[in-house]
Image (cartoon, rainbow, N blue to C red; front, side, top):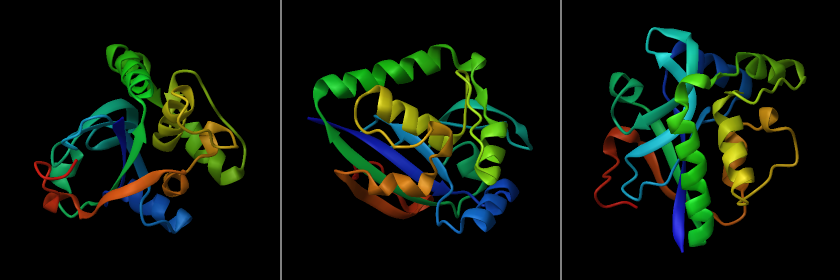
Length: 179
């Protein structure tokens, strides 16, 4: 048995604060990873710090990138125990995204679709939670019973078998002792 990890965050950017106003959720961004040291996660988000409209598949490293500029970032990290074959499938899916990262973009229409309850999906576009939901589904871990583009980060903690590993400020996460 191995573990995959899902990190939920609330960074504090204008975009994340706006989303939080609408959702009223504590966390409004989701990432997924396989690194037992809890250093590296993958998601869909902005690629350019000052320009949130340019987004796509990204690699997130704890306390680097956007997280470095928002040291008060709150996070919750969850673990799901999976069989080795399922873990390998998740790694394979993530490798596909990593090796083709430039063809993936952020699903802005999907974000607006949530507001008006209209699904907007595309093979090469995702929101952060949509991406996590797709990986969970494609690897056989869990399937939400709604379109992927309607999945929200605050729905992830209800997945059966998921357990909280850490919650608090990202800057206080000791990645050498957790995971």
